[in-house]
Amino acid sequence: MQEVVDGADLGYVGDDTPVSSEEPLSPAPGVETVCVFPKNAGKIVPAGEETELLVGLQNEGESTLNVVAVHSTLHLPYDHKMYGQNLTVQSFYNASVPVSVQATFPYTFAVSKFLQPGAYDLVGYIVYEIDQHPYQNVFYNGTIEVVEVGGLLSVESVFLITLGIALLGLLGLWAYGQVQQLSKKTKKGPKVELGTGTTDANMDEWLEVIIPPPPIYLCSAESGAEAYRYDINLFCLAGYRVCKGQS
Image 1 (cartoon, rainbow, N blue to C red):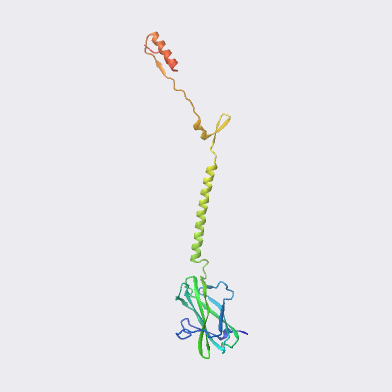
Image 2: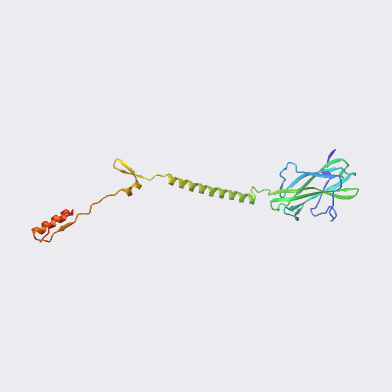
């Protein structure tokens, strides 16, 4: 048999209001609990907004129990001794669970809107009495994800998007440089036309152009005919042009 406890029997107490004595309470024999986040499998908790979960309780003990309250605390994931926030204490009236009966209790809480987004550990407790003796069960001890409300992007999201754009830009520059180097290796040198044929410009260094020395005009200062003929014969054999000198 299962019973859902209606919200008409609920009451709310301040965040700092104690629901039990300072001594830690232990669970009663035969009492089992379970927790479900309705339509919220990822356990996403918007900061500053209410989040609802359901606490299931099964009484397999020997006496009827009376549920007193449900409350929870928020802890840093790496150290449960450090409290992030004491959440709402939700009290119940006339919420009795007979033997061999299952009951479901709704619990609504809200984390501070100023809480830094990220992963936190949520510890939920349900407090009940059996024969006027208080007991307590931990119905949830796990991680929730606190997210911002109202902003399209969080600071972490903006950082990751900016980093991704920068990496894509660097990758594009690297690819452009590789394409430029490849095109330089495969590009052929310009061709120079020589008459009706063509040859590569880089072959110009193998062409030898023989330019004859400029003619030297020498005039003989000798007045004798034999010396003049000697000079003519000498320089003509050497390939020079000789002019007649003036005495």
